[in-house]
Image (cartoon, rainbow, N blue to C red):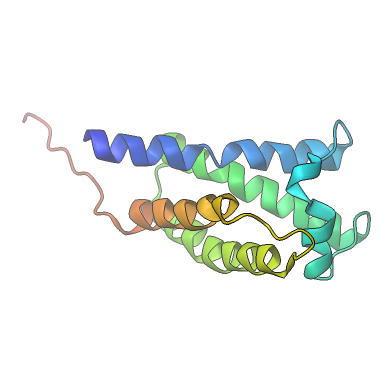
Length: 137
Protein backbone atom coordinates (compact mmCIF):
# COMPACT_ATOMS: atom_id res chain seq x y z
CA UNK A 1 0.00 0.00 0.00
CA UNK A 2 1.43 3.34 -1.03
CA UNK A 3 1.53 6.40 1.18
CA UNK A 4 -1.17 8.17 -0.85
CA UNK A 5 -3.48 5.16 -0.64
CA UNK A 6 -2.89 4.91 3.09
CA UNK A 7 -3.65 8.61 3.61
CA UNK A 8 -6.89 8.34 1.59
CA UNK A 9 -7.96 5.45 3.82
CA UNK A 10 -7.06 7.31 7.02
CA UNK A 11 -8.86 10.51 6.04
CA UNK A 12 -11.92 8.64 4.77
CA UNK A 13 -12.05 6.79 8.10
CA UNK A 14 -12.64 10.07 9.94
CA UNK A 15 -16.26 9.92 8.74
CA UNK A 16 -16.81 7.50 11.64
CA UNK A 17 -16.68 10.42 14.10
CA UNK A 18 -19.92 12.08 12.92
CA UNK A 19 -21.38 8.60 12.44
CA UNK A 20 -20.81 7.87 16.12
CA UNK A 21 -22.24 11.28 17.00
CA UNK A 22 -25.48 10.52 15.12
CA UNK A 23 -25.92 7.27 17.03
CA UNK A 24 -24.95 8.74 20.42
CA UNK A 25 -27.40 11.62 19.97
CA UNK A 26 -30.13 9.20 18.94
CA UNK A 27 -29.43 7.10 22.06
CA UNK A 28 -29.94 10.23 24.16
CA UNK A 29 -26.44 10.49 25.63
CA UNK A 30 -25.78 13.96 24.24
CA UNK A 31 -27.09 16.52 21.76
CA UNK A 32 -25.70 17.79 18.50
CA UNK A 33 -23.42 20.80 19.02
CA UNK A 34 -25.41 24.01 18.39
CA UNK A 35 -23.02 25.09 15.63
CA UNK A 36 -24.07 22.03 13.58
CA UNK A 37 -27.61 23.45 13.39
CA UNK A 38 -29.02 19.94 12.89
CA UNK A 39 -32.68 20.77 13.66
CA UNK A 40 -32.55 23.52 11.03
CA UNK A 41 -30.83 21.31 8.45
CA UNK A 42 -33.27 18.49 9.02
CA UNK A 43 -36.16 20.95 8.83
CA UNK A 44 -35.03 21.94 5.34
CA UNK A 45 -35.62 18.37 4.15
CA UNK A 46 -38.83 17.99 6.16
CA UNK A 47 -37.55 15.78 8.99
CA UNK A 48 -38.80 16.55 12.50
CA UNK A 49 -36.75 15.44 15.48
CA UNK A 50 -38.40 12.59 17.33
CA UNK A 51 -40.61 11.13 14.60
CA UNK A 52 -40.04 7.64 13.16
CA UNK A 53 -38.42 8.97 10.00
CA UNK A 54 -35.91 10.91 12.13
CA UNK A 55 -34.98 7.76 14.07
CA UNK A 56 -34.58 5.70 10.89
CA UNK A 57 -32.54 8.45 9.22
CA UNK A 58 -30.17 8.87 12.18
CA UNK A 59 -29.62 5.10 12.42
CA UNK A 60 -28.97 4.85 8.67
CA UNK A 61 -26.60 7.84 8.63
CA UNK A 62 -24.70 6.64 11.69
CA UNK A 63 -24.30 3.05 10.52
CA UNK A 64 -23.39 3.99 6.96
CA UNK A 65 -20.70 6.38 8.20
CA UNK A 66 -19.36 3.70 10.55
CA UNK A 67 -19.34 1.18 7.71
CA UNK A 68 -16.70 3.18 5.81
CA UNK A 69 -13.73 2.46 8.11
CA UNK A 70 -15.08 -1.05 8.76
CA UNK A 71 -14.90 -1.73 5.03
CA UNK A 72 -11.57 0.03 4.58
CA UNK A 73 -9.70 -1.82 7.30
CA UNK A 74 -11.64 -5.06 7.91
CA UNK A 75 -13.99 -6.13 5.13
CA UNK A 76 -12.06 -4.69 2.15
CA UNK A 77 -14.88 -5.17 -0.38
CA UNK A 78 -14.90 -3.18 -3.62
CA UNK A 79 -18.64 -3.86 -3.94
CA UNK A 80 -19.33 -2.28 -0.55
CA UNK A 81 -17.04 0.64 -1.45
CA UNK A 82 -19.08 1.23 -4.60
CA UNK A 83 -22.37 1.03 -2.69
CA UNK A 84 -21.05 3.51 -0.12
CA UNK A 85 -20.12 5.89 -2.92
CA UNK A 86 -23.51 5.52 -4.62
CA UNK A 87 -25.27 6.25 -1.31
CA UNK A 88 -22.91 9.08 -0.37
CA UNK A 89 -23.25 11.11 -3.58
CA UNK A 90 -26.95 11.98 -3.23
CA UNK A 91 -26.59 12.07 0.57
CA UNK A 92 -23.86 14.68 0.55
CA UNK A 93 -25.67 16.59 -2.22
CA UNK A 94 -28.67 16.78 0.13
CA UNK A 95 -26.40 18.01 2.93
CA UNK A 96 -25.03 20.72 0.63
CA UNK A 97 -28.57 21.68 -0.36
CA UNK A 98 -29.55 22.01 3.30
CA UNK A 99 -26.45 24.11 3.99
CA UNK A 100 -27.28 26.52 1.18
CA UNK A 101 -30.90 26.88 2.36
CA UNK A 102 -29.81 28.09 5.81
CA UNK A 103 -29.65 31.83 5.46
CA UNK A 104 -30.05 33.26 8.95
CA UNK A 105 -27.06 33.29 9.37
CA UNK A 106 -25.76 31.56 6.25
CA UNK A 107 -23.52 28.54 6.64
CA UNK A 108 -19.87 29.52 6.11
CA UNK A 109 -18.37 28.01 2.97
CA UNK A 110 -15.47 26.42 4.86
CA UNK A 111 -17.98 24.12 6.57
CA UNK A 112 -18.73 22.59 3.17
CA UNK A 113 -15.22 21.20 2.73
CA UNK A 114 -16.16 17.73 4.09
CA UNK A 115 -19.22 17.70 1.83
CA UNK A 116 -16.89 17.64 -1.16
CA UNK A 117 -13.83 15.88 0.27
CA UNK A 118 -15.53 12.78 1.73
CA UNK A 119 -17.34 11.77 -1.51
CA UNK A 120 -14.08 12.37 -3.39
CA UNK A 121 -12.21 10.06 -1.01
CA UNK A 122 -14.97 7.46 -1.31
CA UNK A 123 -14.75 7.69 -5.10
CA UNK A 124 -10.99 7.15 -4.97
CA UNK A 125 -11.50 4.08 -2.77
CA UNK A 126 -14.32 2.67 -4.89
CA UNK A 127 -12.80 3.32 -8.29
CA UNK A 128 -9.13 2.61 -7.65
CA UNK A 129 -7.89 -0.77 -8.83
CA UNK A 130 -7.66 -3.43 -6.16
CA UNK A 131 -4.13 -4.05 -5.02
CA UNK A 132 -2.95 -7.47 -6.06
CA UNK A 133 -0.09 -9.21 -4.34
CA UNK A 134 1.45 -12.28 -5.83
CA UNK A 135 2.78 -14.82 -3.39
CA UNK A 136 6.47 -15.39 -3.65
CA UNK A 137 7.28 -11.89 -4.94
